[in-house]
Length: 102
Image (cartoon, rainbow, N blue to C red; front, side, top):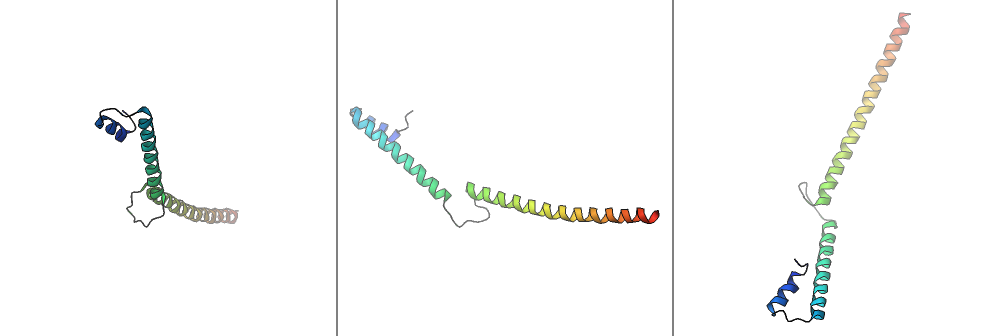
């Protein structure tokens, strides 16, 4: 199967009597057009836009996942700090109890 279906269809519709040069130029132009369309769609997809919480554009989904991961990491860090403070408090209390028992 060719990557230039429109050119192939035009050649067949014309009875296959296109010159090799005309066919090659038409195929090259069709490929360039398709590449330009792909690049334009990529630019549109990566452009800044107003979206919502359920937007399914790949960059928006990744951005939400990143933000959720950052928030979770922040919460875990805060929880860890509280736990470490509790550990220090109880360790100090234990040490004081041990010293008082001597």
